[in-house]
View 1 (spheres, rainbow, N blue to C red):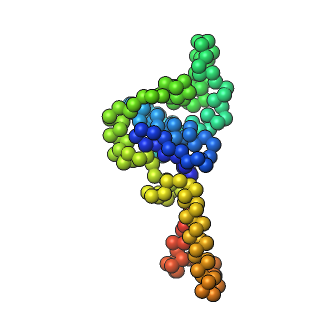
View 2 (cartoon, rainbow, N blue to C red):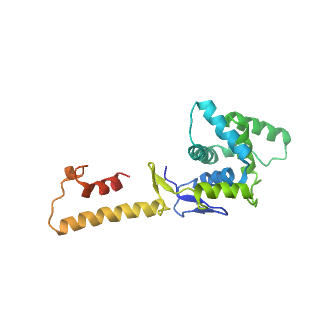
View 3 (cartoon, rainbow, N blue to C red):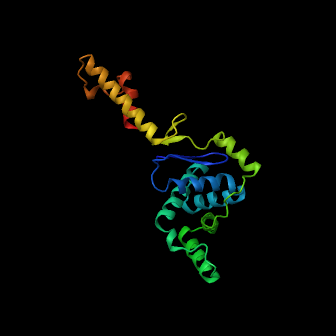
Length: 201
């Protein structure tokens, strides 16, 4: 997953060229990591693992839920009227949302995010302490295909680095009059192995 946003203790940071819906992905992380109780988190995570007979880590589960929320907001949220004053419509929409998500707790969070219930709420100290212990106060590190980069925080930054390194490598090789044999990019050539990993990533 290519993430071009980051949640911190007191904000959501978004890259200005972030793909559509990144703000929803990060909004889920902000709410799930800092604004709901540990009991609510455990209920959501444990229910998912039980239902799917999986043993995913909390961080993996939260990525799944963040993507589900992003897709919901982009593709389905317009079908629900979260702010209606018509109580019958509000209850009906909530039941539909509950059926769609498969979890009452998640449906409630979706509804509350959309109704602005979390706006302006300050995280409690236990959530902040937990967040710091997991992420060091800065949110998840940038990750691509399972490789975590601690000092690269934006996809475009990563992309520019790969392009620059690749260009520099071939430019130097051609300047020295060397012919690049692509079959040399294998494990027996440690010099090329790191370039291969970067290009593959």
